[in-house]
Length: 187
Image 1: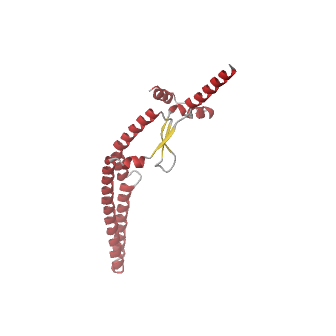
Image 2: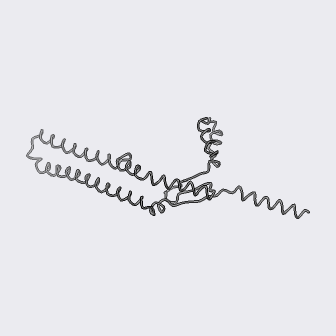
């Protein structure tokens, strides 16, 4: 009798620990996207546009360099007013070239916007596939191996302890966020 109770408790403990275990997984988004033909097409367009923009910037920089060379050759022959005028034109052209480069390759530049718009449908498709896999495999956390740092692609909201930390810090929760979190949990 005592042995059967012991084995029953042991079995419940083992099964109980298994049912509460969190499941982790990882994916490599670079590998996944490299296998997608749509991604290759978009990447080709991005590369083509980048080469075109680099050529335009190079042309603008060459124009500035030519103006500077011409100025150096004629500097001694020019009056002070003409020197200032030519230097002003050179500075203006240089600023235009730098401004154009920043407009295209800056943090909120045309290249960034184009990439974001072109890759959004592909990344949405990957995201939907990730959601399906997470639900099928009943994962709690999914990491992305392709990113430099630690990137979580999916986390089960049940394991989010942010509210407890806020409470411990004496900060109040936004009631709208609490409603949204409970809606997500119910889905």
